[in-house]
Image (cartoon, rainbow, N blue to C red; front, side):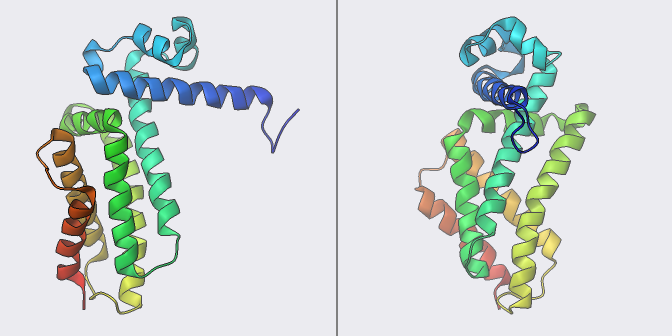
Length: 203
């Protein structure tokens, strides 16, 4: 019986894909692409190896989908938090904390993300996919900044460049935390990012 245009089979298929992608993020994050195996991913997802191939043709396709799945999850979270009430400064703080916290809580995914970014020049498909999803993330920050300019909370800055700067600075701090080079708390790291940016754009 269809539910909101979806059959029971559709729901089960989506659930199974999500399970496989979650397992893939974990295994790829721990072992990297070359050392990870479909067998381990299937075992982690508690399915047969053949089930994996029902959904994904190869380990590479599963790897790219795991990367896409992670970035899309982050983007959905950022859009959700950006829709809440608050000033430009308050919302930027919320988004910064959301992004850093996401990587703290999904370190396996971030290892994939960080690894793939370093190899983009040799992976045209990865370039297009990561670029498009990263652009979606930038647009979330752009909306907040444009509202800030309109409300005269911030100066008339180049919104696109500022959005990229915030996203990249936040990713850099998240990387430090992943590598263990940041010894400060989440709150301190969020303060660092937001204060640095705000000093440059506030009226």
